Length: 118
Image 1 (cartoon, one colour):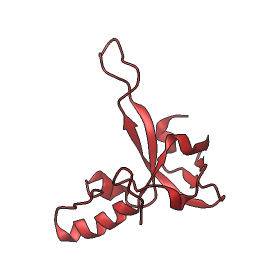
Image 2: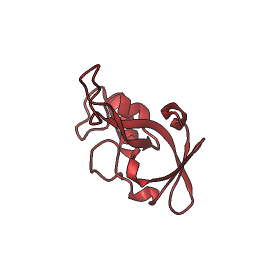
Image 3: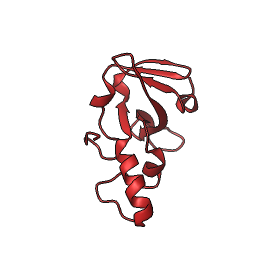
């Protein structure tokens, strides 16, 4: 499966509910070092699911949201509702569907590492 095929996939939680859409990936550059580039490869760390992906792309996911009030308020609230699915929680990947081993409500916020979404 190509990573691009995950975008738009439906997320099914451990209760069997269809709960969210996959919007983005979180990557870490901590894989094996490539000889040609002398840089570490990227590894998929997790999936960003739920609402708020536009706000996260624009930097509105942090604790201190700066910017025009007309944007920072709504985009900041939406970004905080987006959740992060750690790659270790994924039980099944198939075209258009990702099944995870926990309830959607137990996933942390995608805006701040370790922050629970509210």
